[in-house]
Each structure stands twice: as structure tokens, then as C-alpha cells.
Image 1 (cartoon, rainbow, N blue to C red):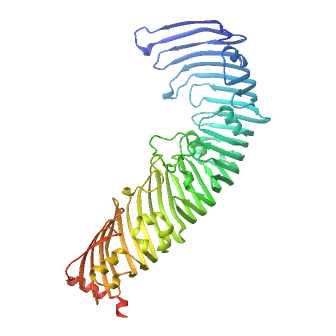
Image 2 (image 1 turned 90 degrees about the vertical axis):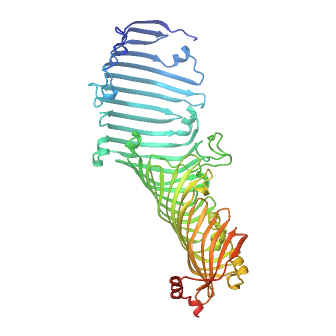
Image 3 (image 1 turned 45 degrees about the vertical axis):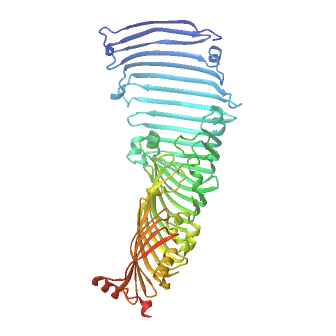
Length: 583
């Protein structure tokens, strides 16, 4: 040390008469420490660890610039005067909400703080704070700050606060001024975060948490504004910065309203309007942040919100596989309702248009409720949920209804449809879908195929199967040309998915007087196993058993001996006469 700490004086007396640490007592008296013109004086008495009675007093006067003379600080330059006085006595049992009585005063005058990370200091720092507890209870606590003020690059900022009764916190807080958050973050060099931009506050908050909890909002007097000016937030948690072009928070009682809050993230631009509530409890950690927000966007690119990106994030979790981006993270401390009006949404090679509906976030789960959109120009309604399991895993459930879509267009434009329905590659026509599906997503937000399970109905209105190899093979092996490139009408394919296998329930197909019954399985690797029966005209009572194995691209057909349907099924076939065969 370049300067010595001088005249260190104190007396200490301690004992433990029976070797039981509960009975320890200690007394430090006549503390008197000087360094240059600074001093610390006081005493501290403690005894009996069971109820921990304390009797203490401390006075200090410090010229802050002298700290650097006594102990070198290589990254901080400080100046100003600090005076502190503390008196405390009584039991300390926080579990029982028992505290010593206390009278404490802290004053800082004409101070400034400068770090090596930014050339300009925070200056004209003034603090006048007092803490009291006259009866040693939670109710007895009071903190009075009159005020905390400072100036940064010519912009003044001031905060006043009076908080008392920590059993039912009563608060009276005022804040006014402008903060350049970007420069303040540079001043303190916060690892993992960087911010550019300013906020302006003009706030007056007065009330009690009991009135907030009981929703007696008429007793509150919370009002004011926080204005955001071109705020840019960088975080190692996300690959791109969040940008707030403009926005105003308006505080009224327990609510914060946002109006035309324009945000950017990569190629995404969104405008938010709405309100947030339960903010005091959220800040205390006693409940979620609640909100009701309308989100409008011309283009929302969800792929950019994946948790990690190899090009922009230098540190990645060990569990994150090479080449993975990470899943979208859903916060656990939100209870939010979003209504959406999105012209175009891109997600994992899906181009979705005209997204309108409700999105709910609660308990780290995102739910979609009657969300309507267009996929490959088809009108779609979806209900579903999404839950983050880790940085590289998520789970989902959804029910999707697509009415009258062009199967060829859907196959060409939607990769997931190609994965789930590879047989549609040669199809042309109009179908509808009503399907339930659940499973897990990998680090690239793509379904983990073995995890998928669900089921539903693919309704064919009118579809032409061109070059569909299963039907071509059946036509070749049976000699029935009508089964080659058939046109299907008004058929329901009911399937279930589990363990990489799609199971088709028994389905009846009518083609030019022929009646094909088909049921079986196809796996995501393309292998098939179908049991079929080709019923011959006029009613399909006489038919040919068929066994189809191999793959969808190379089916192996085994034809059995001609048989007849049981009498009950013969009757069903006659009642279900094909109008086309009659004609």
C-alpha cells in the first residue's frame, strides 16, 4: 500500500463458558481506525447464538478519492465525500421476522465515478438515505431516500423514495431524467450484455402492495411515462440484437400500457400495443408478469429467435450439437395473452400467411388458440402448445385443420408435409386434413421423427394419382388397367403415427367399378406393409387378395387366389353402390 492505515485501535473480549457455540459472546469496543483524514469508529457486541442479541454502533467519514491513495484501483476513479452513522440493538432472528432496532444514515456529496471502460464519468452524485426500524419488526422498517441524484454527460437524473412497513410495503417513489443506457453499460462493462440507446423517465409511484394484491387500484397513485429512444439490446443468449425504434410506457395504477411500440429483430419488424400488470409482485418474485398485447407484423421470422447461432455466439452449451441453432426459449415468469395480425411468418422452411388468432404464454408453455393462417394458400386453423425442455429440445402438440388444399402445391411448398406424406409426390387434386400430432423438436427446431405420435383424417375430394407406384404395381400384377393412375373421389384416409410408423385403417377405394380395400403401415424410411383386396365389378363381392411389401418406390406385390366376401360384407357392398358404376 502506498499509504499506511494508522492508529488501528480496538479491544476484543470473547468467551464460550461451556464449549457450546450457542453460548458464544463477543465484544469489540473502542474501534478507532484512521487513514489520512478518514476514520472509522464504533463498537460491536454479540452474544447467545439462539436469539442473537446485537448491540452495535459505527461512524465513518471517508474522502472517496483517498481510497485510491490507500489501495490502488486500476479500473475505477472516484471522488467525493461519504459520511455514515449506524446504531443498532436487539435480537436478530430473521426466520421469526425479528430484527434489531436500527438508526442508519448515509450521505454522499459531490461524488463522481469513472471507469477505464468509458471516458466520461458519472458526476454530481448525491445520496441522502436513512434506514430506521424502531420496534424490530417487519412493520417497523423504513427507508427514506431524499434523494439519489447524478449527472451523466450533461443529463441529470434523480430518484426519490420513501418505503416503509415491509409487512405491507408502502412506497412513494419519484424518478425524473434521462439515462443513456448504452454509455452506462460501457461504463460498467456488463459481461454478456450490451445496450445502446436512452430512456427518459417522469414517474410518480405511490401506494401499498396490500392494495395491489387485493386489487384495490383506486387507492394507488401510480402515474407517469418512460420513453424509449432507439434502444438496442445485445445478449449472448440470442444471435441478433433486439431493437426498439420507439415506444412509450404509460403507467397508470397497477398497469403499464404500451402504445405503438415498434421493435426489430433481424428481418422481423413488429409493432406492440397493449398493457402489462402485476408488476410489483413480478419484481418481488411473487408472481408472473401479466399482459394483454396485440402484435402486428408484416413479416415475422421465427428462425432468427432460435436460442443460439454458431456465427454470432462464441460460447455454446456443451449439450448443443455442432450445427444446431437451439430451440426458441419460453420464459417461465410470464402470463401473457397475445393477439396476432401477421401478414407473413417464416418458420423452419414454412411460409405462413395471414396469421390471426390468440397466443397464450403461461408457466413456460406457449399455446395457440384458434389461430388461423394460410399455408400453401390453404385456409388453416391450428390449436397447439409448445414447451421448452432445454436449450436444444422442445415439445409440442397441435391440432391442425386444413380445408380443401391443393395437394401438389402443399407437397411442393411444405417440407414437413413431404416428410409425413411422401406418397403425395405424384398426386394432383383437392384434399382436406384434420390431424392431431405431438412430439419433440431438436436443436434446429425440426421434429424428432421417432417421437411423433398422433392421428387424424385425410379427406380426399378429388385426386388424380399419377405414377403412384403402389397402384401401378397392383395394376400390373392383377392385369386390371383401371388401377393404374386412378382418380380418387370422396375417400377418408384415417391414420395414426407412432414409433416412426404411419398406420392406415381399413379404407375403401372405388375406381371404375373396382373396389379396393387397403390397410397397413408405412414407415418414415419408406418401407410399406399393406394388406389389400381388389373387389371386382359389379359389387366387389368376388375379389383378389393382395399383399404389398417393399418400399413405396419399389413395392413388392403378392397376389392370392380369388375369394368371396362374407355375407355380411357382401350386403354392405351392395348397399354402398358406386354411382359411377351405375352410370
